[in-house]
Length: 461
Image: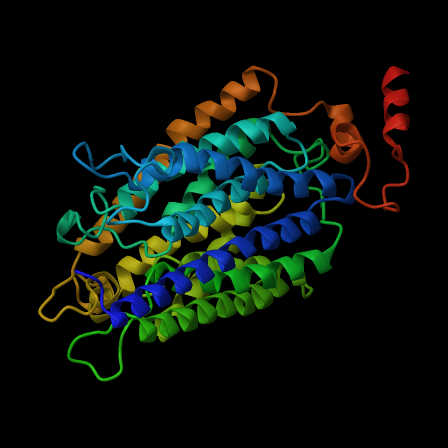
């Protein structure tokens, strides 16, 4: 039987919506690149931009070959832990997935490695980036995605863990917590950058070289987040039964609003919070606070009221501020605050969803507004302990899984001597020591070698 004209138009519009969302999420790679470049010193700008490119190209191949299959593979051998089909997109398109869906999920996968790269910036060998990016995008992240987003995953909304299943709509845990925990292990095993702490353990300021790039990157990420969160519905032309002019298009709009409110609240709270702590207004702190709010709301963006998004952003700002203070006390050096921002705020996002998720919105997001459907809502919304329990299980499972996989990988790279660059190369800068020259013709570090030949002559002497 041939499909009707109406169904063909509906499927076409939904495919266009998903592809456009994928393009928006991919724009976030540019945002990450600009944010990272501005947050490091000028002598490492080329290196950090190249690592962002590598995260995308290496992640593309690993996700195509293995990652998508591990995340969404289904069939006779499907299990709650890992997918077992669709390797190298074999049998795609299928009755469940098509190329548009793969592209959208690929954009998520390459974002994870970008998060981790920020935690170990300015001191990591380039070969190490190639290895961990391939492993993270092709195996570690897809397994978590299978747990939560595959219909057969043991944490998914279909599993009804604790009568609920975990709700991580766009990936506070699946994407951001995974990247943050991986980055934390990298930063711990590598140790701080040369000069980050003095002989007495006091932190020394190492500011990024270009605030303009940081702000540009932040706005690009904000723009991309409108594909990240609202785009996770997958389809926009889904009408809710027994409603007047309501459907996924309504929820998509609400999701964009909650995303904006959470990020904006976190940004303004960080602005005044850091003003009280350090005595001045800092644009870079506001940018990180803004991103922390976006990370936190990503889990519950589709299932909470706009007022709850403001609560989410408020506490996300203090989570980030507190974890940054703790990181300095523990002498953890994360140049982009990625572990604190994506890991800490991602964890808070999972907990927040377990507290504030609204049953009506959960049914809309996961059951297309099905009449008579019942779902556990957030603890503070009268839903009991089921959802918050599932959220905490997801949080602990992700921390445990990433620690058991990425921790040993970083330690192995360290043991083999291919993780961290030498002290001389680090002081000279990765651009000149590893990439043949600086990102800029003129830069502030005038005391260093200006050309690769000068650097080699210094090494020989």
